[in-house]
Length: 416
Image (cartoon, rainbow, N blue to C red; front, side):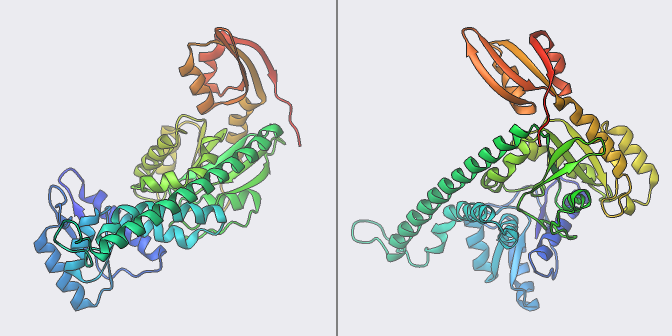
């Protein structure tokens, strides 16, 4: 069920509903029917209008539909009211995504992150689960058993959220130690990013024979995988596959997966895999940019990889995107077409990471220092009076900014 607003094109909305249907299939469900209501904004009580709610409730009873899924996140009140009208299980887009993640997470880290996201979603919705037990009157001696149970449940959920947050803090610390070990190898770290089902895992398997599960479904893999790879010029890399992104990816899900997605923020080079055969590939690219900005990773060196060209029927489209997007290549991870061009572009981009620069900055240049941390790699730093001395790998887009502060240049040694 979706709501079409005046400021939203019908094409975008139809595509969003189609994506919701793909999510339902990924979760193991079957789409019986879809419905759209056009109105300026969601209603506070039902999200859709009350008349539409009653109409769809009757249809669900007639068709024996067990679950109704809405394409936006519902408020606790909307969920409660809709369940009363429909007398069916009501889910929203966030709950559906959380369910898929819960099915796919295999590692301990992934399960912890999903459980935390589920509890964060559940906490503000606990009240509605006990309204059938609470009393209407107030005052001393009239607190109902449901109200007492609600307080107990809320406290337990909060305690569990705190415990899971501590455990994930430990996970982040462990990952940080692992990353420091990788840094000592001086191997560039490349992370695959992209919209879900763009072909990231297939590409990793093509390059490294990693054996990562890959399927034509949304969120086929969640847990990050890191593999060594040697380019044709003998340059060694570490390649990391990460969870796919999605338009309207729930914020608290991103927060819960920070322990995993820090692999993206710490990468030297992002390999942005795009499904060029998808009719809305540009909107998917924009959705990836939004998530990268939230992770403070936008602006890093990036190779844009237009994948699935074996499914593209218009050759002019391939020429168009390569011209429009510098530092991009077109490939098919399934057939292997274009892999030579991809390797060549990665070689060109990571070449800059063999250059190590010693800088001395005035200590008021905190913005430049923050940018070096965000898009470069700071190897060591020390503060001396009114200056900051540091050794860093500086990507090409920052070399002009730091040129005046360079005191030493050299090539970083390669180990391993």
